[in-house]
Length: 355
Ligand code: CP3
Image (tube, rainbow, N blue to C red):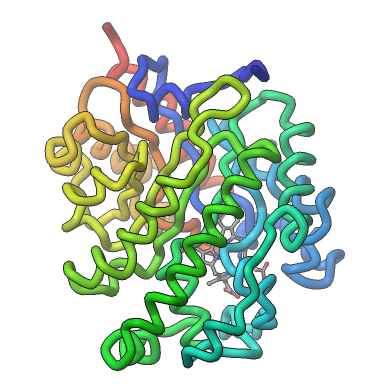
């Protein structure tokens, strides 16, 4: 078993005592950091950064050099899977991700190849093992994937969407076609996450960014069900240690009770749910991760600290909490504010971990 110098994240997810609450930030690597922008410029494109293991490693570690973070997250993207399936991902300035080919029919779903993550997404596995070597046990490495539903929204819509009319129309007109797509994606995600675990990811997170756009019934049937299937198929122990799974459904706060039974070790919360109430609702079935509104990082330092204090007080005493933002860091925040946030979590949380 590789020795970890900082195992707060794994301990907190397991509900074991910690000296302070662990903290990391979704999208902690990225455009708000000038050193990221410099390397991105040199690489030429975002995908070139992801596909070069040394660059992906450097970018993953950049935020750890600035902030006292308790985890690293693989630098990559959720859209690597549909890209590897041949949909032709590119990024249009100001528009976000776009696919050259959309998936809209049974024939399109049938034509999607079954991936072998080790080879078809070999660049991701090389990045994972390079990062693990470079981290040398400093903090655990989180691997990730999009949820089948969230990936399907991009594949059917052809890019980002506000109202998901394309995929919801498919859901209403031909649910069996959507189910066939989600089924293929669930298999691909399971294989992809297991390959990341074998390459060295010590925790995995499923980003279900758009699950909250569904009705309660449709969320169960078209998102949660497939995430549950993925978790059932995950390697749960590797290198002598449990590999915990985190499920983050943005806007999923109203479904926590059912989500707590999906097999995940930890649920991510956005900022619209009170974490103390959420803790009561899930009991000790799962740990919780969250949930500072990322916009708080625009506030004066003392406001950031008092908002951190508020969430710590809502959670209360004891382990089982991983501090995070409720969604990714905004691209125009001042990096110094992220430092205020991370330091506040460590400093102010100590009082909640006394015996
Ligand atoms: O968290 C991290 O630091 C790890 C890296 C990471 C990225 N994307 C890097 C990235 C992670 C975990 C993601 C996940 C991701 N990607 C999600 C789910 C999480 C979420 O934020 O809801 C989604 C929906 C995507 C799809 C995607 N990729 C979008 C919407 C964008 C932004 C497009 C834009 O131009 O604003 C991307 C590109 C992307 N992924 C960037 C980064 C740092 C910016 C690319 C650049 O440098 O130009």
